Amino acid sequence: MKRLHRLTAILVKLQSKKVVQAAELANKFEVSLRTIYRDMQALTDAGVPIGAEAGTGYYLVDGYSLPPVMFTEKEANALLTASKIIKTNNDQSLINEYQEAIDKVIAVLKTTQKEKLKILEERVFTYNRTAIHPSTSLSVIQQAITDFRVLEIQYTKASGEYSKRLIEPLGAYFTNNTWIMIAHCRLRKDYREFRTDRIVNLIETQKLFSPKHFSLEDYYKKRAEECDFSTFPKEKYY
Image 1 (cartoon, one colour):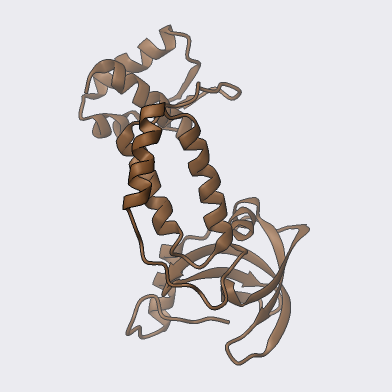
Image 2: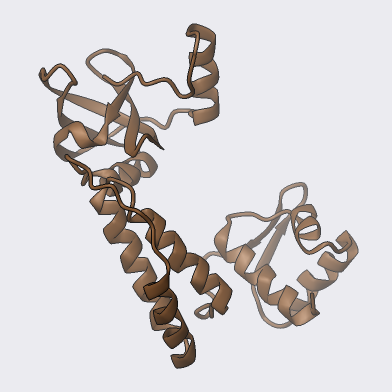
């Protein structure tokens, strides 16, 4: 990779993460740590406000923003293909949000790139199995996960029983054409899983919950210790 391309890629990496380690950049671009140190100095000399913290890594100083990033044709093609795949999932809010993002990508492409993307749009197809009860709440759930916001949901179990409760959303996964939300149920005082297509109504409350240490990997490790799984993940919807 030419140095100019590497410097540009380093800037993109710095903008996409809070802190980037020199070793991570060296591995990504297959260069030495010394080369990365020289690149960082070059960017600093060029006026890019890069901060460094010993033992942590590099970061962009708050308030600095990079100019719009131009996409290569292959990158645009990959995003278009991903949008086709996204449309096969059963949550309409995710489809809408991703389409908004794709429209912004297309807006910055050159005319020739747009023409090629239009050709690809007409020639890439993914089978979309229409959901009987499509979900519309994933975008709100994702925002609540990162904002640590309590949600109030009205939910229908597989048995048809209706319930209403406050939950603290912690994660989500996609399986069998269905999005599953993992949350801490304040009523049951325990983790529960909720199918998003069974959420009848969802309200974003003004209540915030204390951040919890949570990862899907740890969650399923714990479940694996408690259950004998024949499939993974095993359905355990509330």
